Length: 448
Image 1 (cartoon, helix red, strand yellow):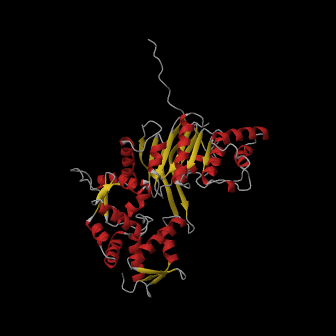
Image 2 (cartoon, one colour):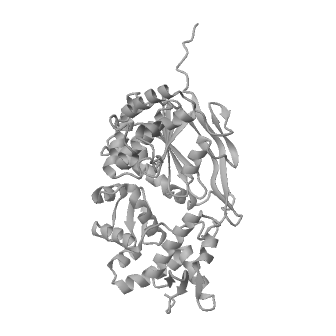
Image 3 (cartoon, helix red, strand yellow):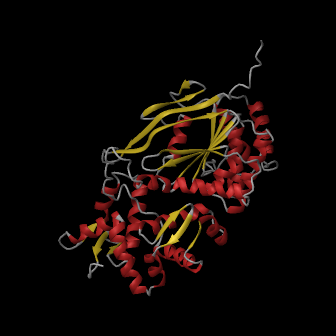
């Protein structure tokens, strides 16, 4: 009896095995960014790395490209562990990264020149790539003459011209306006489906849920601080994908639930089975383990008022459609409201709590008092600042004191962002003041 062999499994281009990455802060402390990440990128697929700020998405992408080395674990290209830049990948960056003194054609030829490709072949391949991404006629233009969308097309051409096995993209559409980003996504899908793009696989980093569902065959959802894979989802929807179909909306809702960790919370609160070992009590929240979402009090209040007007409950997808926002734009507002106890979420729906209704309906003085109580109870950084100021002679401290503490768990940029949010929230609740000239936080005369 002769057996007919089945279709062979697609070849793996990139494999990450137990990748952990830790950076060292200026004061010598360890800052874990990635922890035990394993996945593979196979020929013929688009994979999305989806996560919030702090999930290490861009760091993971650079490890895959061989631009930085893991602290532990390995990244392999076609079975060979990397010891430097990967020979078979090319990157598209969020910031375009074009050299302003070079023309479009010269920018596209750069990567070929670095590989020692002869001048005439460089020219021919660059012109083909420029034509492929729709910039024919702009070969002699300089970056300053191009719109943002056109500059990103040059970035795509520069990556595609080397005909890489895998195209790595780091939030390539986030610096563009909504219409331009949508157009470029559609063209990327068209190139991929038409087999016109000279690549075998695509790995895209994004924080945008709908973008991941629109583009990817698989979505890897990353948890934050440090980054690790929380879930993997297959996207079995035909392309081009319609955002308005129930299947698309259901998948967006599922990803949202995973990204916000509501399933994890539900499991954690489930009663343990008889005879099971007692669950370890979670550590007390700290400014490092419970970061503040980067939103203003006004934005949060506006979302609550909209929800109250809609009966106090609605789906996140429905709210984003009504406001013409991406669902991802609402996530920080939702996270802040949930953190403070003004709302709760479940099954990708948001429900205003009694405290939220009181806050939305209150006059300005009452809302400030209510916000101050909730922030002290639920926002660890706000509470830590207020307590430190209360315990200090003169009730004032330099902002550098808090920044040094925050840098134990955040990058310098994220530490500053956390302090900025805490200052905004503390000022609103009249818990403390901030003297920007002196760089000092000062306890409010009434204590809030």
